[in-house]
Each structure stands twice: as C-alpha cells, then as structure tokens.
Image (cartoon, rainbow, N blue to C red; front, side, top):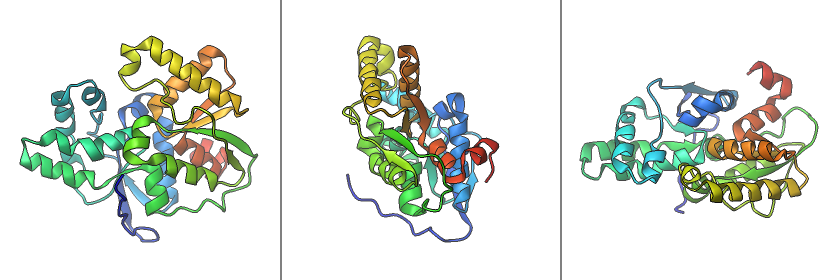
Length: 267
C-alpha cells in the first residue's frame, strides 16, 4: 500500500469536515455515527452531514454490478463541494469510495475527475483521528479497566490499512488492554452479499471468529465496520456466547469522556 501524505490540520482553527455516515450505520447503528461526530467535535472539528447521501455502492460493486454501483456513486459526487476531508466511520466503505469510485467512470472524464478529487479527501475515521488530528487520549478520565479484542474487516485491512490505526488508538487509551486472538486476521464471514449467497460457509466462519475471541477471556469485541459487528454480534447471541460488540467510535467516545458522558451525549 502506497504511503499516504496527510494534511497538517492538527491544532488549526475552523477545521471543517464532511461525514459520510454509511447506510449500515444509518439503518442499524446510528449511535456509532453520532459518536463519530462527537469524537470529531471533541477534537475541535466542525462536522457537516450532507442529507442526500446514501450507500457507497459496495454491495452492487462486489456483486458484479458496476453499472448500479456507478449510478449510486454518481448521485453523490456533488454532495461534497467544499475541499474538506470526508470522514467515513467504516474502512470498507472508505475503501470503496477512495479506490473504486474513480474506476467506475472510465468512460466519463468529467465524472472521473470529480471522483478522483473526492477520493483524495476520503479518510476512514480512525485514520483521520490518528494521522491528521493526532488525537491524544492519555488525559481520558479514569474508568474501570477493560480487556478487548479488535476485529478489522477484510476490505478495511487491505484497502485502507485501518488495523494499524485501530491498534494505535486502543493501545493509547488508559485502562484498556487489547488482546490479540488466533483468528483476528480472518474474515468474519459477512462479506456483504457473500453471507447471503453462502450462508453455511459464512456461519462456520463467524462461529470460528466468536470462539477465537471468547478464548481470550475478553467479553468485548471492537470494530470499525458495522457489517462485521452485526454479523459477529448476532452470531454470539445465537451461540449464547459471552461476547458483546461495539463500534470503535462508540468505544473511543465512551472511554474518552466517561460512560455517563457518552450516554448523555455530552461534548
């Protein structure tokens, strides 16, 4: 993966960003999106949320329907007109927008140019917090110690390199111990439409993931990808396994501002 050059925004005043909330967060885990906003505002950033946004187009793209993915992307290219970073609290969606949106418009030079310009402004949330804002959570309020396992989606790991960002942020939190498990690098079996087309294989994969996480003795799994969290969380419930799941944004916000502050939405 080619090293990325990051803008020097840390410490600047009047930093503005867009948030691309993702359809899964919007429909299933809205609190994770709100916690992403809270983390950014806590760092002094003004967050804008374009109301016309929808899906990144990844389900259609990964299912072999680039035409449908292109129309989804085309409908949103105009939603981020200012030259501000676009923050995505999902590594797989960020990867789709940064690496694949420009590819969708090979026969449309004008749209391709706009997609390339936008792609350069796409950042996964933990990447932006770590490498652009240079957040320092050492002064986070004292809380009960927690041991957690981390899961990084396949797309986030390959296309955005976000495992290293999640590791760095978790390891910097006072009172938090990140424990690696045997199957951390393996797919959870979700894979978007893969879980629908191959449910038996998907079920076996997520069962292995849950068992591996539980074998560490940890009772909480943290990830920055909601599709994986839904898959792993539901599997743990079906298996009656002692494993809770939490989006990285929500976990970070809870640890940075304290559990009660997170519940009340205090910034």
